[in-house]
Amino acid sequence: MKTANQPLLSLKGITKHFGSLTAVNGVDLDVCPGEIVVIIGPSGSGKSTLLRSINFLEEIEEGTILFEGNEIGYVTSKHGRRHLDVPARICALRSEIGMVFQHFNLFPHMTVLGNVMEGPLTVQKKSPEAAREIALDMLAKVGLSDKRDVYPATLSGGQKQRVAIARALAMRPKLMLFDEPTSALDPELIGEVFDTIRDLGREGMTMIIVTHQMGFAKEMADRVIFMEKGSFVAQGTPEDFFANQMEHDRIKSFLNRIL
Amino acid sequence: MNFFPGRVAKRSILLFSCLFLLTASVAFAKDYDQLFSDANDAMGQGDLPAAITILEKVEFEKGDDDGAFVRSRMQIARLQFALKDMAAATAAAQEVLAIYPDNSEALNFMDSVKKEQKPRYAVFIEDCLRFLPQLLKGAVMTITLVVCIILISPVGGLLIALGRISTFKPISGICWLFIWLFRGTPLLLQLFFIYYGLPSLGVTFKPFTAAILGLGLNYSAYLGEIIRGGIQSIEHGQMEAAKAIGMTYWQAMRRVIIPQTYKRLMPPIGNEFIALIKDTALVSTIAMVELMRSADQMFNAYFNVTALILAALIYLLFTTIFTFIFEKIEIRAGIYENR
Image 1 (tube, chains in turn cyan, blue):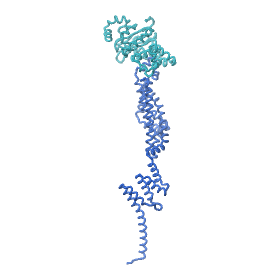
Image 2: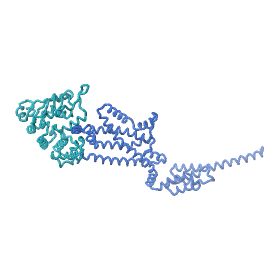
Image 3: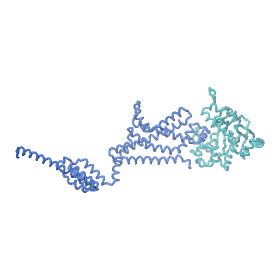
Image 4: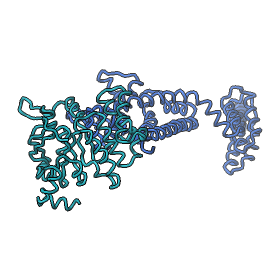
């Protein structure tokens, strides 16, 4: 699904510190429309932080984020201080980028349908009927139409994550970010979530996925990136990555621990 | 030997007649004093019938100037009352009333006899009916205060809670100060300050306004801390998820965070409102006539403890109803957790 167009998302020199710890250290990344990028690496390597900074849930100190060719998210004041853009613009950007969390973070006080409707209803100010229609479409897409009137507490982990995906999709995002979407799931529930993500990939959704599931990376990714200590250590197509980069000592030891 | 016989005879007659009058009158008074004293002795020995027999010897003398008759009959009445012979007791009091129909002691005594003849519950019910109209008037005011504060304080509390968690320092500072002040001083003092203290600074309130102001500020401060705790207890991922679909901070608060606090806040807020019902009694000190004040008035007017018991029962009724309502609301607020 690779295209040679202008990158949808372009990260340049992204740097983020937590105190004295450098979480992300000058990362560059171009993601083309329709591309599926899988980021792997040991915990604490900065994968999640990188993903969260794309959605402005983390504020980066250095670097620029270009979305569809435009620099976004940060402005420089008269005094030369860099800070996050006004909330209205940040919110507008976030609504174009869907995000799925490790712990689902469904809204427990809303039904499944209510969760999926919430974005179109509150953020896009659509009418309840229109929002409902979109939500029902999205629930059908993740195969949970029959669960629309129940509360999230009654769902299995896999179902919860599929609802979370539907909730993100309801905003019609151009880019989807998955932050370890299966790490909180029982092994037998991982498959249904990956099936859903796979379907999205077939439809041409651009995705950045942080995961520990190597099988999935091999099968789905257009590009696999290994991240460690805040930097990209190696990247390549799955074939290339798992065939050649395996010689990289650190990747080998990491994969041996995982597999 | 007969010196100045005529004078002596004259003097003697005078002297004797005086003496006679004196002894006669002394004998007359002393007679009853002795009777009363004897009766007292008999009572001291616990022989009440003997005391009654002695007192019955007191008779009605013209005018009953020294009140001995009334005194004796009332004493008999009380003794018979103590012996549970209500007929005899009434008869004794009636003797007094026959002569002095307006004698208040006898009339009161007849009242107590009537009461004694009734079963205790009937007396209680009679007292209740006597006090209830006044107490209910007070209770209406109590409920008015409670309802007003229940409407005002959650709004005030929410504003203070949001102010407290604001990242804008002046706002969070002011809210901290507000809570510090109103939680750190007695409510009674706050009420006194508003009603009695502020007029000296040129601000005068009616009792009701002062009561609403005092209770409202105090309860807003308490609820502010409770609501802040509730908001901060919601998992951080909820705010992130809301932001990730493009919500602003305020949209996330209104749609996602605050609705989730309802169930968690119900028990502590219910507690506060039950405390509120009782705290309204404090405004009786700033010229408000509510349930506590009404009960106090009744108690002081009749020196009848039934007024206080009745007020306690009304307070209990209110707190019970509130407990019940809050349990129901709590279950409803948490409906998504068990369906």
